Length: 194
View 1 (cartoon, rainbow, N blue to C red):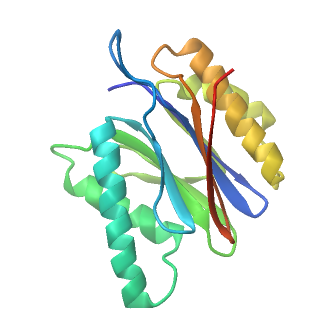
View 2 (tube, rainbow, N blue to C red; view 1 turned 90 degrees about the vertical axis):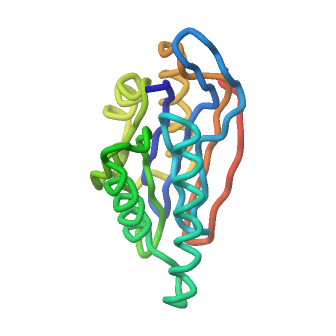
């Protein structure tokens, strides 16, 4: 599976999703500017590691399904519904799986986040990392994560985790995409990995 590093962290009032921008196949660096964080609705987002085409089609299809569901329900689609829709789509394709690991999360009453594997298993968590740099990122997240962090603390921790992974994982690097989701909506920004 192509390399990547993506992390998700819950904080008091929201979640942070962060990923690096590199696409590498083996020793070949394909791109240095690929987006791997996706807003699904205005209160739910996802970040992925794996095949970029699979990430993109999954996020586009789920965003479309979430819009349809919102029109039916006449209210925002919660993160657990988005995670379940992703899980169903991934499990339906289990014999020819979408080669992507996903962290999906958002805010309803409180922040909630799930990790999905390529077959659609849904695992709730307060923080997570996926991709080839996940071990290095978790080495930063495990000792430093604490419940009810502030937004700024969570953003800095996410940046630190992805940067640490990019220093040791040759398939990760070339910049950071960060998506912050709160009850007020989403905010996206990009930074260099220093």
